[in-house]
Amino acid sequence: MKKLFYKSFILMGLTLGFVGCNEDDEPDMPEVVVADGVFVANAGNSSLSNASLSYYDIDTKQVTNNLFAAKNPGEELGSLANDMIIYGSKIYVVVSNSSKIEVLDMTGKRIKNVAVLNEDDSKPAQPRFITSYKGNVYFTAYDGYVRKMDTTSLSISSRVEVGAYPEALTVASNKLYVNNSGYGKGTNVSVINLDTFKEETKIEVGLNPYNMSLTASDGNVYIVTMGNYYDILSEMKKIDVKTNQVTTICNASMIANNGNTMYVYYSVWGGESWFKTYDLSTNTLSSSEFVSASQFTYVNSININPINGDVYLGDVPKSSKGNMYIFDSKGSQLNMFEVGYYPGKCCFTGKTTK
Image 1 (tube, helix red, strand yellow):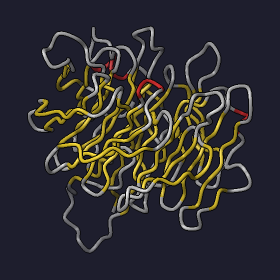
Image 2: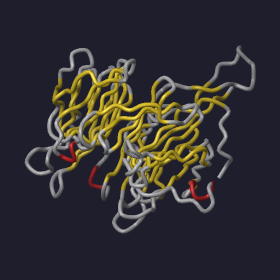
Image 3: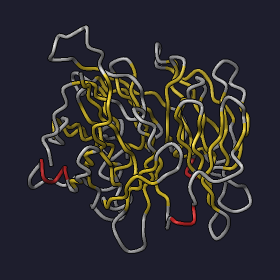
Image 4: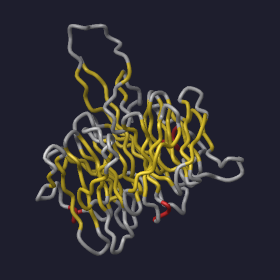
């Protein structure tokens, strides 16, 4: 694997904000952002400590698996790497069952292991999902709180109570929108004012808002309510950030966004499954599939490379490690490579060329 050092432009997950510097002072030459690589958080089996990190070099197509173990000899990533972001020059990996946030440098080497415990530090709080905004990272935990961590001190500075078993979260209009799953019984999303770090309101959205929450290019929040996996089916919902009005869009199990295109995967156990696109500018679901859902065993994640629009789909074959498929924005397969168990969140890096 080539050395994981990037001259500039490190991207945070699916966010299009670049930070960095250029070593060559040539203002007359335009800079071109190119895709560089992708970190993959492999969640692992929830009953085992087999979570791992993979890195895929887009230029060479080389894959490095078990990156955390290689960079931190004698250490394991832990149990259930549920989410991950890149913010600034650090990688933040949420390891839920191990109740910690692993803060890494851009090579995968540990900077700090941040334990996430309940209020009196007596029990694991089980962190779940993470996002970032204005110098802080915010993450949910199963004790019912959202915590704020300063990215310089890497210490948890405060927390705010939301609903039972909070899951995915996203930032829009200087507010934090948090899915309160209630372990399958929740029906609302908490809205937290990030200036005061207090909950402003709860929005009723439907049964079981769970692991899908994003801010799309139109500035609004999109979530998936998973229902009860029986007669109340999973749906994509739009939350208008100006009015808090909730609109049901279509059936969905997973969603991802790039520009005006929403990528929508839907699957019913023992029933139909499809992978389509939804146009935010026309409010139209495509009639044909983006790619055929029937070719996959168990889709565990969908991520979009914001530099070039490529779609990364994590699949879990039976009794084997996961595969990561790469498609271009038209649905043509570009590559497939093996990663760890249950490939989930992808974080992309980029660099500039002269």
